[in-house]
Image 1: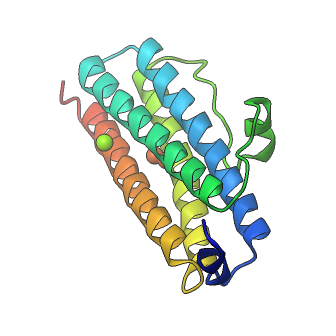
Image 2: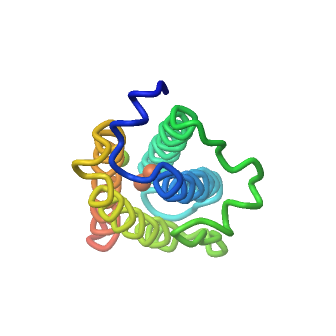
Length: 163
Ligand code: FE
Ligand code: FE
Ligand code: MG
């Protein structure tokens, strides 16, 4: 990012980067939680649930990619070691110790609700200060809201025995 590009950002770049790095860590942990959940989950509606978990994993990885690109544009270095992810993340990584579909869906739902809170807060931080980051976070928040809704629907279908 050039001189003027940086100058027009009305928020301290170090502070902004700190928040973006934390979100980046969240996304990798969310990616892994979905990715592994899709591999090991079992129970009713397994096929439909695995398909959704895999789709969400892919989208979480895209979020990590977007955050990484923005950090680099800002002249910042993304976390260099996966060990840092759990240390700096906003949202907890929930290990899928019980692979039953309902448990996996509930764990991921908890993750999405944490993500929605995090991005809602981050949007407020950058509003009217950094339009480019604002747009990126808005797109991510839209995805996280959709993820929450998808998981809620699957849990509802499970409950109603639509399988
Ligand atoms: Fe995400
Ligand atoms: Fe998500
Ligand atoms: Mg979906």
